[in-house]
Image (cartoon, rainbow, N blue to C red):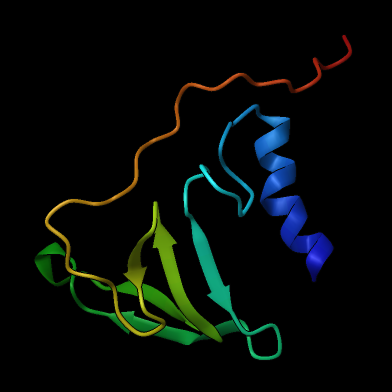
Length: 104
């Protein structure tokens, strides 16, 4: 599990040159997904009728997830989303990508 977490956190941050992300350290952004590795997974598909015009969407609730934090703010408690006036995150659209160029 540790290697899987590294590959989707610090490895990606390093690969794309995204500073202060992907690691738990002083001065870094506090983005966390807290989960129980013994129970993490996805629940059964549910049809939720909350779209305009009576439309329905499919939702699969997480299992074994105990919280999601974005920049240190809890946005999901494992059951429901936080009701915030403004989201704590931001779109990361500028960073120093160091992805190797594709061969011709």
